[in-house]
Image (cartoon, rainbow, N blue to C red):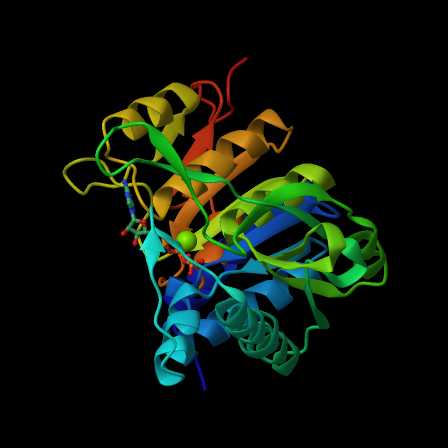
Length: 308
Ligand SMILES: Nc1ncnc2c1ncn2[C@@H]1O[C@H](COP(=O)(O)OP(=O)(O)OP(=O)(O)O)[C@@H](O)[C@H]1O
Ligand SMILES: [Mg+2]
């Protein structure tokens, strides 16, 4: 099949534009959170998988952390297990935790692994239990009491937060050129499983490995302002204000929280972008434009580098 001169010039331009990024990022680690809400159809999953394989082949070290909220909900419904949410978090008793572990560690994780491998990558699926990767502690949730407004502690079961990351298993996989795909399940004292928000897992993993970038792929074009417009750059101060005014809420909260933690922990940049755009990852990493919302601790200067 022939191509026009224009098409050829475009392709050459794209490849040339990518070169400095490929050189700059060679050997660096990119932690990519792949949201359950971005895995909407197979074409998109394939485009994501191809991007990850390409990143690896040009010398970057991608690490995938995935979510799966919608997929957990689906199976619970099919199994007739009722669920309750407190403050946006699923109350997770033993039976629910079994389903969470099956869906995240079994179904969703292995789907992503197969997809990456089908495109020629070497993905290995693990949960936070493998090699003790994600040490969890039970998340303590408080809510205002029914009559008094005195906060009371609510037991939401096996919902955890990251206490510590033990990165050895990841270092081993990276050294042998595998692509780790991590399900956000942590192990608590005594070996209990905990369901942890995947954004938080991705943030802590990025921090522990000193990643170049933490990329959160979700189902919105980025962090949106009160009018629904995407905000291309945000600082720590902006995020604090947007949280206080309620513009950042629900599923976006753990993303901005973990972004700030990761930045304070030494991760160079955090980007929140729309995973439902084909090849979002490539556009973000290898083009001058960049897409979505970039979060930094300090304001970004003209040159595009965070000041301070
Ligand atoms: N200011 C905001 N800008 C954009 N989205 C926001 C904002 N505030 C709240 N949200 C909500 O956050 C959602 C994204 O988080 P959500 O947890 O639903 O998806 P995910 O994290 O990508 O998937 P998963 O939780 O399965 O891993 C958006 O769809 C939107 O409803
Ligand atoms: Mg989420």
